Length: 108
Image (cartoon, rainbow, N blue to C red):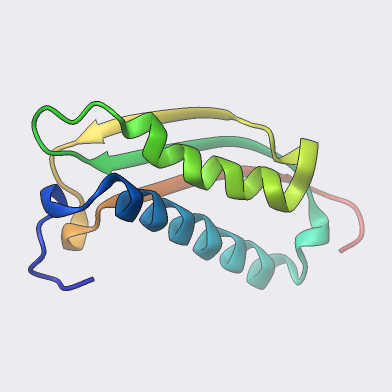
């Protein structure tokens, strides 16, 4: 995404794609740290921050894209507690930021 592009100019689908990309990046970090996603026992919590224009109230739909990806990857172990929070801006003009807590253990 062009650095000058304002978050308010994104469509809902573009914001959902940004959330999916965040979830993919999370999984890449987890795999890098653990050596394998097989070590993930449960996705405990996902918190999504959505840079939102005034009058935008569909943050939950944006973060749903990240939640769905984690469910698709981990099945029932991918179900998690979740929050979706509107913020006026994020660092580097990012449209979405995702934080997650994973339960890990066992052989990877």
